[in-house]
Amino acid sequence: MSGHSKWSQIKHKKGIADAKKGQVFSKLAKIISVAAREGGPNPETNPQLRLAIERARASNMPGENIERAIEKASGQSGERIEVVTIEAFGPGGVAILINATTDNKNRTLGELRNIINDFGGKPANEGSVRWLFKEICRLVVLTEKRSVEEVELKAIEFGAEDVQKESGNQKSLIVIGKSNELEMLRKNFIEAGCKVELAEIDLVPENPVSLQQKDREKILSLTEKLEEHPDVQGVYLNASLQI
Image (cartoon, rainbow, N blue to C red; front, side):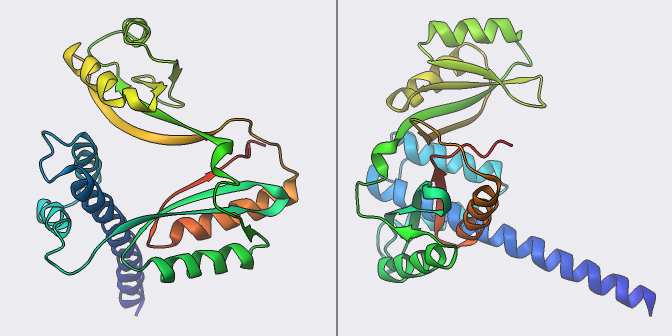
């Protein structure tokens, strides 16, 4: 009986892991479809699509899934994926910006607004939150073939705005730059013989606010619930969650 019980637990854990992997692949597929529709299906001439594909491959997404996602961009499947942004205020007055990709805008907006309300938040008018964030690019550059100092000097030479050491990893640096310089920075590092492990556009708060412990716990729970939604691609806060 104990063996059967153990196998049941293994199957249960595997089922959870497979479900999470499936959700990740679904989210990545939507990003690929949107990028392909907006910039064309050729990753050689569409930097956003190339980055989306690289991100998918880094998550071990099967090639056939990637191809299907690109094909969906043509609209031949009858499914059209669009990007939606939801602005809200959460516990403690924290500004929240949510990016999602969906084939049913009204359904997604309704579900996300319900989650926000359930956690004591309040949906906001368009434009009332977005201005509190700025868009940046972030690259993770490996330093295996070059010293940290060399990569830092290269980052300065290429026009990066900031260079940070990645916590817990002595073999990579985080390079921050202007959002419109992502592709330029990526190409420069590759041509300099550096491996770029990650290249992405991100949103960061202009002036992060501090939270009381009770509000911090609420906003963490809300963020976790939002990120679990299958259509959500990113949740951004103007709060510092450091204790």
